Length: 167
Image (cartoon, rainbow, N blue to C red; front, side, top):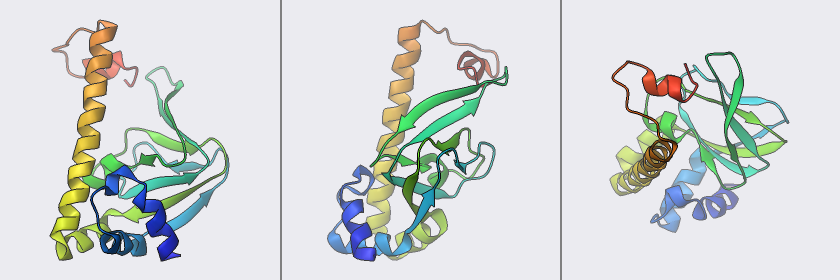
């Protein structure tokens, strides 16, 4: 099973630059989960500590607005990742992940990855660099979205969250 997982990881941009041996080391730490349609995989407000790689099916990223409405933020498909923020940041999740159809995910825990990264600093550096690049890309995308929408900067605490409908 570990060899099959390593083949999947080979095609995940987060693990770009890793050797076959390094991918195999990460694959040994992963386990597979199956989720039914409508099953909540991660809940908003819970502390996250896992990285998920969607290997089949699709999931929605959703949050509840201040008005109590469920708002879909994204639809993820095979090959997409989620939980990367929670993988590096200890704190509550800001969104929920729900299986929109039956799906399979590979799961990597922060704790087991940190042990591996301490033993193999090059591996740890490459993965964390790739996560940082993803976060930068998403922040840039959000900046552009805000600029294009004409949103104004707000000195008021929580102004951006209210503008996004999250408060």
